[in-house]
Image 1 (cartoon, each protein chain N blue to C red):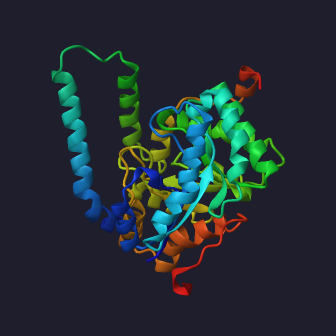
Image 2 (image 1 turned 120 degrees about the vertical axis):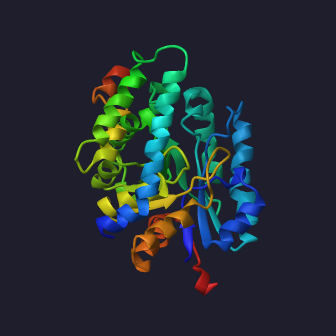
Length: 272
Length: 80
């Protein structure tokens, strides 16, 4: 089955991973800008990173028939540095016309601080000004519930934000329903230890339904598994879900969400 | 899937997870010191109580147990 990984950090992965993903059916992916494992020192570091995302990574993916898209921002962890964040936000428009840029992301909260909230809202302003879709990171572990509620507060109090063009990522059992009930898209991240396992993600799909729900591997430089989406496909098959239902979750849904972006021009494999 | 099929499939996995928890608690008991007054120990005890309930949203309850509380006045507190 073909699938689309809507959240994966390929700058942290090897070219061998691209080959493996392609062999397992991955035909498209989107890569949000994120934390590199260390705090960057200047806006020029981000400019180089955005060049990597918009120029280099899509070529690397294309060698294996994978269409690569990306999202730009300064992540929540580095958003604690307000001065640097504002410099990065001011620079992002230089890249918004690149053909693989889908929008602003992954913005969000990390430790649910005042500075993170300020920069989150300034990213919202940027997205609105340039009519961009938004991809949102929600915090980890004990901070997730509080942070997700704060993010939803900020989104729903801004009448300029269209929920159908926003995906709130890393939802779990205690946050999925509220995100979906408020009209947003939701993403589940399949991680080996934190976030969701494939089994729990399928439980959530069975409880919440498949409308506006996506799954991703968020494969990155930490403990993560870039082939986690095929693991979910296998789990859904083992539970007897029909192929059409599985395809909706792993292929149709991300394409439906991304199709709202002006730069999304995905060609299905059968039409290539 | 029927509940019987789920049990057939997951019995050994559940057994292994319970065994792992038991071994972790034994390891804690064998170690020097006392963590019984540690807040995390209390959370673990409460988590085990949730597991033994018959509610149908135990995973969600466990998530909330290990979550910081949300206060809707956070914007006033931050002054934004």
